Length: 276
Ligand SMILES: [Zn+2]
Image (cartoon, rainbow, N blue to C red; front, side, top):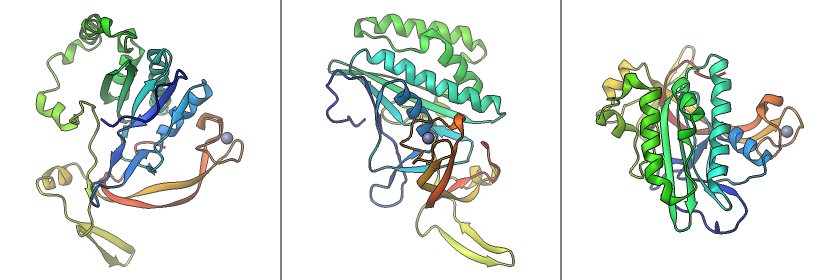
C-alpha cells in the first residue's frame, strides 16, 4: 500500500490512499467514488485535515456498490480520527438504508502508530456493515501492545453479531474481493479500448461490448450491460453556490448540481440505479 508524504506532524489528518484504477492504459487512471466526498466533508467539518488524491478523478457510479478509498489516519490520537471516519461512513450508510437503497459497501481504515500501520477492512450490505460499525470492537486500538486483545474482541464481537455466518464467507468468496494489501474492495469490470463498438439503431446508439475472458457467464446471468461511467469535473453546492467538493455544506443541507462532467470510462453495470 502506498504511503502519503509528510504525515509525521502532530495535526490530526486523514490521507485517502490506494484508490482504485481503471485497467485501461499502462497504469490506468486513478479514481475515487463520488460519495467519498460526503464523508470527507463531515471529517473536515469536525476539524480533520483531509488529503485528497490530487491526480484522481471523482466518478459517479450507480451500480449498487460503494468502495470508500483506503484512509490512513495520522497525527495526534489517530485512533480517534479513525473512529470519526468510521462514524461518518456509518451515518451516510444509515441515510442510504433509510432511503431504501440496496448497496454493498467496503471501507478500509488505517492508523499510523510510530513506524507501524494498523488497518481494518470490512465489506457487506448496508445493514450488517452499520451494525459492525456501531459495535465498539470495530474501532482500532491506539497502541500496538493492545493488538492481540483487540483481535480477540473482534472475534468475539463478530460471533455475537453474526452467529449465522460464522463459517462464511468461503475463502473463494473472500479472495474475490481481497486485494493483495488485505483491503476488501468490490471489483469493477471495465470495458477496455478495443473491446466495444457502437451500433446505430432506430432509437439512437447502442454500445456492444465483449465480456473479458472467463467473465461472460457472470455478466449474462447478472444482467450486466456496458454502461457509461461519468467523471464529475465541476459541481455546484445547492446550499451556498460554491464548488461542492470544497464548500463546508453536506449533501443533507441541499445537495449538489453537477455543472460539468465527461464520460470517464465504460464498465459493466446493471441497468437500474441502486441509489437515488
Ligand atoms: Zn456549500
